[in-house]
Amino acid sequence: MYPKARNILLPDGKDPNDCYRENPEGFRELIDRLTSQARDVLSLAFERLDSELAKQESKTKVATDEIKTIWQEITLLIASVDSSIERDTLARYFHEKLKPLGVRKAAVEEEIDAAVKTFR
Image (cartoon, rainbow, N blue to C red; front, side):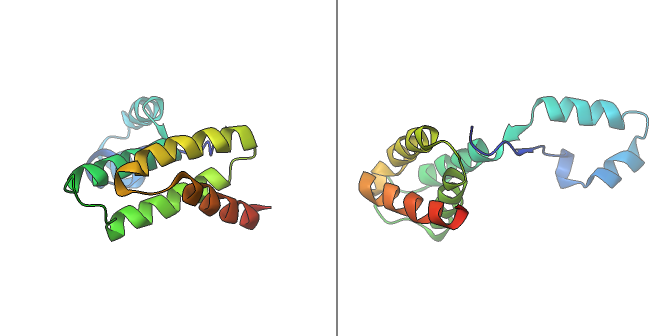
């Protein structure tokens, strides 16, 4: 499976220490609730990509710097997947997301293949 690290988002961008100080009795409950809602890193990156793509004008086929940053992150996350079958499936999904920008499937695969070499 792809990277299994999961993120939780604390209220109002607080750090865990702030949350504990504000409510020591409810801290464990807060963490348990947030942990049950935690999302894997790759899913969050795809959501960020979707959000940035939606901001672009539909006729614009130029990626913003933010989109480039996110797609580099996604490329590295996909490259870190051990299973070549899962990598291929994720690469196809990734390509579908980038199609509106005119990105070729071969280009996505080349980027992922190059990144895979850094992990092996």
